[in-house]
Image (cartoon, rainbow, N blue to C red; front, side):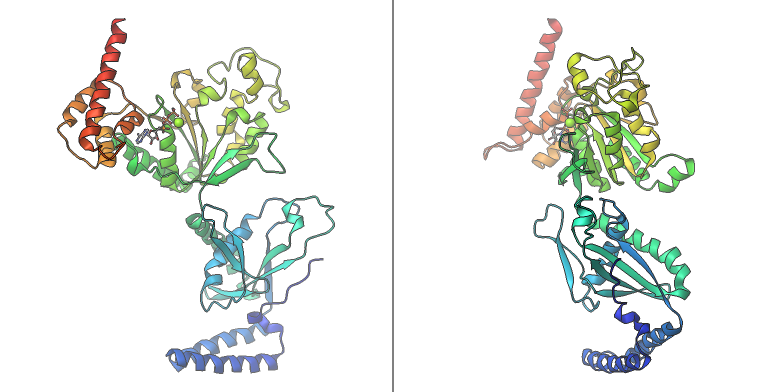
Length: 487
Ligand SMILES: Nc1ncnc2c1ncn2[C@@H]1O[C@H](COP(=O)(O)OP(=O)(O)OP(=O)(O)O)[C@@H](O)[C@H]1O
Ligand SMILES: [Mg+2]
């Protein structure tokens, strides 16, 4: 049986009345002296203490209830979300000067900052909190690991089992259970999102997977934002508005009965900024990125598992969807025996021997992943596909409802060029701008190439030399295009 922790000192209604009163009086005297030293008014201090001790005495006739939040509940290997949320909620009170917590626990922060520590209450520490006139106390405690698991069960059974226990008065039951606890979870989540180190996840191949781990991650620190992404300003605004509407759309999606997710298809030639756009979207929304390498996903079942293990507030990306698998418009062709029991009734795409080797995920597996029943779990996810060849994709894959917004990433227009010139060279106007405008109207050049020519390469390079080089390259491209036409 789990060892029961001592009740919180502040909630010591079960202590003897006499010692309670003596301790209370001593506490009042000490605090009055201390606060007078700090310059506070005697009346205020006395008033506060009388209130607090009156509450404690009231607790003698009004018993306490408790709610315990475990870090790992049951045999689960995944840390409980509720525990993390309570820990985050209590973070400020734990670290606050004068908050009463003297012993803190420190763990290395998972993220890019190697020096950062996550601080939480040490064992036996408690903090008080107020909510709608009710006082509650949170106590942190842990118990030794269970030794009946025979070494099974991963992290949950090898380390101390940690808990938070909430104490509150019977009379506050409704407000605490109905309002305070949801409030703690919401606030804890908001704190975590605000302070978290965003992550870029990639799926592990089936040989690398262990336990329930299907993703590995690094800190996501891509510098690209919408402020440095060159594209038609109206189009950029439209995308940002769309993302804003999605982020705020929880009630809307619930009202119309749709899962809270949105699909974006980014298509266009190489170097037009599709991957860059994904980074800008993640930075704008403050979401994590799950980058799925589809060729290392063994089966449709594994794909579903990957999806289930993603968290909300994330962008799930499949780059170059046309190259990852043979998903291109062959759904209705001949039916083959499936590698995966789950896929028995699916029509597999026709593919070469080599593709069959690696492509065990089918088109219908991907369709299910995007909008099957499981895709509704969790919510607040964006799914992004990128491709260089939109015309090759099966229409079912990219129809509205699956890929809700189709964004063409195109060759560099004059507006995008001006934007890049400003970022790379700090110029808004130049005598070569007119020439660049004419040439960009005649030849196709990607923003990636334009950005490269506008990047100063040495100490002698400046706006004049970089723009002159860009004009030269545009002229070369124009001549080449002309030659190709006449051939
Ligand atoms: N619209 C753009 N604005 C600013 N920089 C851009 C833009 N497009 C491309 N770049 C720059 O060009 C480089 C390549 O872009 P990116 O990788 O996003 O292209 P892509 O469309 O994803 O190409 P691919 O189809 O080959 O994956 C990036 O380093 C990026 O900085
Ligand atoms: Mg790319």
